Image (spheres, rainbow, N blue to C red):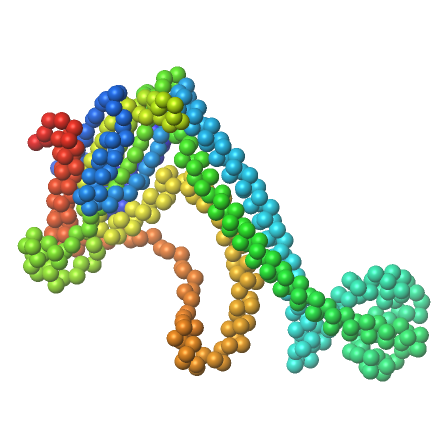
Amino acid sequence: MADVKPISKIIEEVSPYYKKRAERKDKGIIRSIPEAEHKIVYDSNSETLEPVYFFILDLMNDLGLAPEKLIDNFTSTPGSGHFAELGQRATIMQQQATKILGDTNVVLRSVLNIIYDLKEFRIRLEHYKGLKSSKPEEKNSSLLALKQIWMDKVDIVKGNSSIKAMALGQSGFQTLIDAFLAAQDIKSANKIDLNDRVKRILIPRIQEFNAWVEQSEKELSKRYELEKNYLKSQVNSLKLYSRWAKPYLLAAQQLESQQSGREPALVKTFNTILLGLTLLGKRKLDVKEEANQGNLPKELIKHKPKRNYYSCILVDFNFRGIPQRVSQQPHYVFGGRAEITFKAYVLNDDELEKFEEELKKSDVNDVLTLIEGTTTESLGQLQEEINFFLDEKEDEEKKVKSKDESNPFFALIGKYDKKEGKKEEKKPTAVKPDDFIESEHLRPFSAANAKETIFTLFDVYKKAHGMPSYT
């Protein structure tokens, strides 16, 4: 099967309690690291393997363990029909996902271009805002910047009759650029000491520039708003494409066969499949209820535990089967050898949280992480800049309406509900050792429950299948 760290190994690494048990096992003081461990081997080529799995799954639910699947792997031999069948299905999923991802990349490039355009528009609009500033320095610098833009983008299309062409290429107009930049308006232009020939060129250009400033600000503001709306539309399309691609990528990943390595049960030309499944069920310890029933000291009724404790049951399935196609149907059934291992553990809230963190880091979720990165991470990296432009209007509206915050009727409709701020990056969970009550009462009691539960699972299954009773 795939080279994946066993779930039991992860549990034993995250819990200080089971680390100590591992040391005691190495010294020969205890027999096993789990609280209890049982194993069943069931071999029948004529009966399918699904009933074995679902019998235990349903039994765990009946015992209140609420099981969840942590590992679901398979490996089939290249010469089997099952391998070819799933390979074809995986190829279809991959092709469909590739097509959607191609469309996603086109939209992503469009989003990038829109963001760059919006940045340029915003810089230009800052100059227009500066013209209305009460500070002379800011107003003058904005005016000069707009005049430079007008000369480079608008006036330049006049060719030889543009201000720059005349000032640099025709004698007698060398002062034209400096005069245009120095003149605030037509009135100030008339006061500048220039010959009439230059003034006849300068004054109409100042009129043109003033008309351009007024019109271009309106047009640029409209374009800026249209681009923001287009950005919102493209971002929604990008999210939609990502959402469409994810199921196909997940399906393709789930149909992938794991690497067999040197597994002796997998012979290339044989018709063989190996399945690996892991279930984890847990049941919370109700301290108050157990204390009321006399199972725990009465003093614990009023004691509020720092952490909850859970009786955890880990069930590993290893199937070796022979895929057989169902007559006139596109799916297979599997008969063969089932090896089922039951392990009992006791974990508290901190240990379970640490276990989830380590599980996400392990090879179990590597492919899922790649899928998440392919479909959503590229958008996430741009999210800050996208939010800057999309939330800009909302921020302005909040500033305008800030005077109405004293109105009590707005509070009735949730007007002033604050949005949650950005979540800080979560630090790794630190698992503290058990205190006296936990080590002397809660963990031992949960361990006893886990041992009883695991034996019930083991014993009921054996009796239901006519196997000798376990003693």
